[in-house]
Amino acid sequence: MASKNYPNGSKWLQDNGNELEIVEHLGDTKFKVKYSNSPVFTAGAKEIRTGKVKDKNVPVVCGVGYISYGEYIAKPKGSSSNTTEYEVWRGMIRRCYQSNCSQYERYGKKGVTVCKDWHNFQNFADWYTKQPMYGKGYHLDKDLLNSGAKEYSPDNCTFVSPAINSLFTGGFKTITYQRRSKWVVQLQMGEKCSNGNKRQSYLGEYTDKQEALEVYFKHKIAHVIKVANQEKANLDERVYSNLTDPVWVRDYINLLASEHEDNK
Image 1 (cartoon, one colour):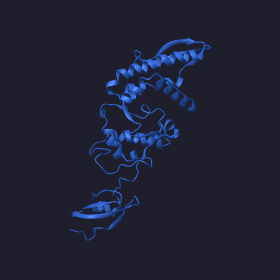
Image 2 (cartoon, rainbow, N blue to C red):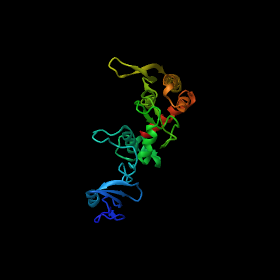
Image 3 (cartoon, rainbow, N blue to C red):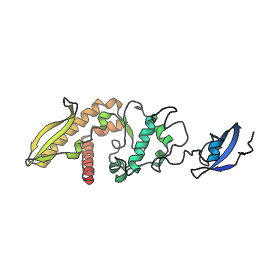
Image 4 (spheres, rainbow, N blue to C red):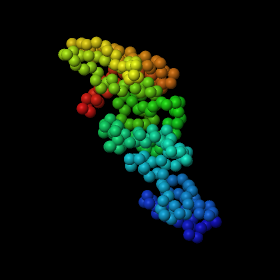
């Protein structure tokens, strides 16, 4: 039965600037409605009249990311916490497009973007929740498949364990440093001090910088390969192949070191 005040086919301008079309009166104050780029969904008469019906295809994160229509939600009803997939998606968007994000310097400012398909949260969440290690505390990574990748996309991203994700954080910032006219080599090898902090393994002092670098690379590459073998069962085979290739590991460390120098 059609509504006299809200006839089928009528258009109602909403606060988002888009017109909402009445598709069908469901009875009482409920209607089937749609935007020009949305599927049919349900809205109430008061929402329609006051312009408060949300268009989920309008960007809500950094003017880029939008929720869209589908099975994946940002926050379960009655919950105070967002879903994991939404938090990961929002964090990814922010570090690429929000200039005051703490990670923007390393991502958006360096030209890192998110593929257009993943601007749509539904598309990202569908990919994310179907990864083999979903729900096990693993991290989204875009570098270990294709080092130097400038785009978050299905082709560049995978899941890695915290142990793998931390292999290249920190240590590359100062490969070696000079003390008493010598190059001192220290390296995090996974050990911890009694207080729980990460221990820096001391690997000697060298008068020649290149010799010190070679000592660093020898031990660092061996450590990376060791951890990769420990994590092999849960690693993308392409990532495992990279992390057990000494040439790839060395090139990747050099890439990180050069990016760090650029940030100074």
